[in-house]
Image 1 (cartoon, rainbow, N blue to C red):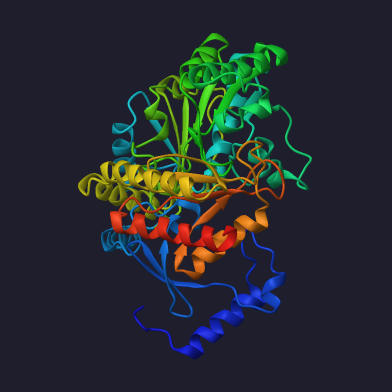
Image 2: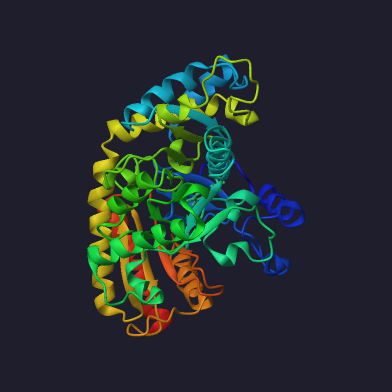
Length: 465
Ligand code: PMP
């Protein structure tokens, strides 16, 4: 740490936080006796708290965001320069970084065409949902309004995105929700027994999991279903990649029933899985792609909803009907700091070869965790793509009963005490948050990866013996 703060300042910060800040995803009762953690500084893969304790951050800002690591002067300089030129003008007009980033982004997304700027992942998803509803009104006589979402997927914290929330734990107590959101089953091979499909393996299961989507479309009536919204690799629901055969079948089904395919890249987007976007591993062609976290690695709040030219064209019209365009605005979609930071972020990923590093380091981390799986029977499954990895903890490998979330939390806390910040992800079952998760910055070195998995090894030995 650079020592700009003295102990008195820090005490003041801690007491102000305790008195006035409501933290995200946090039960505050324990802070009545203890102190919250306040992160003061970050550099590369490391952060420091108010006590000067150094941590290796294996989750890129707790929620898989800071893809290029902390303390990037080039991004800060680009944002500074842009803010001094012009900080804001609503996206009813264009901006220099907004235009240039859109062009650069589309270069990385063959088949896609238009970028709509907004400021959070939830909001980007809401924009896509609104487009689906409007297309239903414009093209299908108000009928194709239903949006399908998948069990275990997450699309945001607002009421409409929670209506598309596949994690019951997160949605409990917040209903009633918006109508016309319909759930389809998950595609998680490790838990296929929960779907009664344990007799199928690999591509057979992949196909069956996708067929389950077709069954829902037929049950609801294809004339009522407008879109299917999926994460390319499910993040908070347990780090789940769909099995072989799944995506081809999903695309086939969407085409057959004129269902628009919306891919939520809020986590996977901009390098996290070793390609620019997660869907690009599977050769599919979405109609909407939404992204947020990694777009500017957290240096500025920016999210994008990207569509094909075909979708965009549906909203072009030279009649005087004022209802025919997309009547939506996001005030902070006009902040120029976002695209200025995003342009630099993308340049860094390209120039430093971070997609390649992500793939190489992800392979190393998976191999290390497989070794830990041999050693610790509590690890039931290790899975992931690039530097986006989960290790699911179970009481018994045969029954796959999840460990209690409190025990999983002890592993996370023990890693923290060793100076390594890891995460754990939600399951659909309340209280059974049982998957350790890892999403280090794409700059991670082999030593960083080994330090993370060594800490997990120690923590598992301590908690489970
Ligand atoms: N989609 C996915 C897949 C996410 O993981 C998240 C956030 N964790 C969101 C959407 C919502 O993004 P935000 O928190 O920026 O609204």
